[in-house]
Each structure stands twice: as C-alpha cells, then as structure tokens.
Length: 108
Image 1: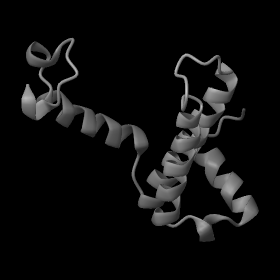
Image 2 (image 1 turned 90 degrees about the vertical axis):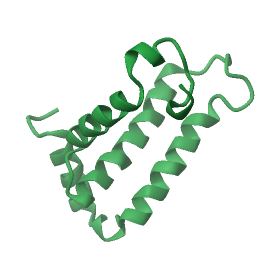
Image 3 (image 1 turned 180 degrees about the vertical axis):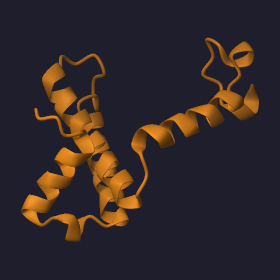
C-alpha cells in the first residue's frame, strides 16, 4: 500500500469510479447496515460454525469502509469521533460499577 491514508485511498477509489454522487449519508448508512447484516449472517444458525476467518475479516472491512466513507462525507475524523464517544461511554460505565458486567448503564 502507498503512503496515502485509508481516507485518501478511499477517496481516490471513489473518485476514479465517479461514485461520490451515490454516497449520500442515507445511502452510506444503508450500506453499513447491509454489510453488517452480511457479517452477522456468518453466525445466523450456529455461532460455533466453522467460518473462514478471512471471510469474516472481509465482511468487517466492508462495514468499516462504508463507515469511513460516511465519516468523510460528514466531514468528521473517524478516530476523533470514536475517542469522543468513548469518553462519554466511560462516564456512563464507570469501572467500579461495570467491570465484568454487561448491564446497561441505566441499570448499574
């Protein structure tokens, strides 16, 4: 891979194909959901099914690709918004009350 960032590589890929016209926030959000469903499909009937790790990785890459494209379309840095959200989540789930528990924050 070149020295370009993931965002730069995705922009170039989209621009070379003139696909930006189709990348509305709505369409990208739909694509995230569709790709996430394809990822989940690997576990549909038997979570212990022997799935190819490579297939799972490729489906995850599709989800992340559309998420990055949506972030770019919205003009936000994916890593920055994840860190900001993590700070909010940390306050909702303080370690002393949530460690080892999957309880929703409003029931801790």
